[in-house]
Length: 461
Ligand code: NAP
Image (tube, rainbow, N blue to C red):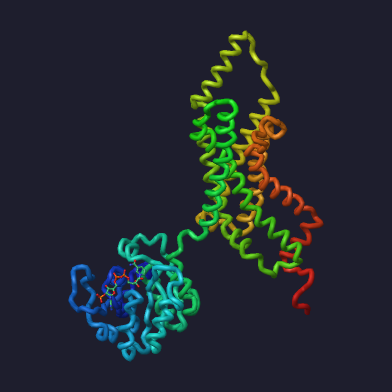
């Protein structure tokens, strides 16, 4: 009985601990959405507005007063006003002295002003304790409750107590505060909502450029060349044949580019004999977007699989098979089974299937919901060991399929190598260098360097 009653107590909301009054300056979209959520969470909300008239849009439990009157009713004031209208706050400086001012504002452009909006607010009202928060949450998400993507609220400020008070409110609203340090971090927090998929820019730009290059390369060799020299029209290759060449080529090159920066980093560390010197900026950035590169590669591999599945129903393929059968019938002879060809064909299909299976596994383990449930060693095992195995299988898949063209002089149209040969340059380089790096004479010093050993220690004891 005693146990039961204590459980019931724990589940009942603590009504005796009534939450404080919070003031919001501005009855705009964000001010109203935040007020709505705060009232739901048990806070009393008082608006400070240019007009004290209430409207149907304003939550009915909220009071609307003048800025000066509202500010006197609360210790925390949320400034839900655009930065360009902050000037009027200087006239309230005395009333705002010692209060916690929460700056939630965003800008239209990255680094639009020399100082952050929060620092600007702190300059306008020097007696107040300014905290930056809530700018990464949208009014719409607050109002509709669809906060899954933006549950994290970055908070920063110079006054620890003020920051703690704001973080308590964030938690009470069911969100997760992330302390970003002093007000110096405000500019970065304000730039955050203005960024458009920052980690995806390089992979998308690179894959678009490579797609364009390989598309026109294949177009020249597979469509324009036969048209110029043999007067054959293969323009329909543009629909399936060429994309089904470009997709696996891109998948393979991008997968290799996921592992290339790691190999380059190892060479740099071996050369410098230390891990304590920063990598060049371009390498740091490249390493940070490896997951995105891998996911784009997986997308290309998946499209390749789909294109491959439709090959048997293509009219061109059916025509080729039936003409071959008819020509055999007309000549009254059956070609014997070419065992080598059968082996090559089955091996390349098997390598492709296994490679794609591991590719999908890599993609799944990179999802946060999965990667959060494996430890660091397990994650490294999948991403590094299985990743290299995927690269080996996919490279072998391409080699077995495209190998027949490499030694055949007729495949060098306009003296240009076949596109499959080009696609193997980066993966083969990565695999060869990685193979060299696992030799004990290189692997041992590299492991030591990664554990903190230095060839020429900067700070000797
Ligand atoms: P809004 O709808 O334009 O509302 C701004 C409010 O500021 C107005 O309703 C008005 O309130 C007040 N105001 C306008 N001109 C003023 C002036 N000259 N002097 C004093 N007060 C004035 O803007 P909002 O979308 O709510 O955004 C407010 C702030 O939140 C902005 O800094 C924005 O960057 C930030 N924010 C917005 C969102 C969002 O999803 N909307 C998300 C994150 C951050 P009164 O009429 O009551 O005085």
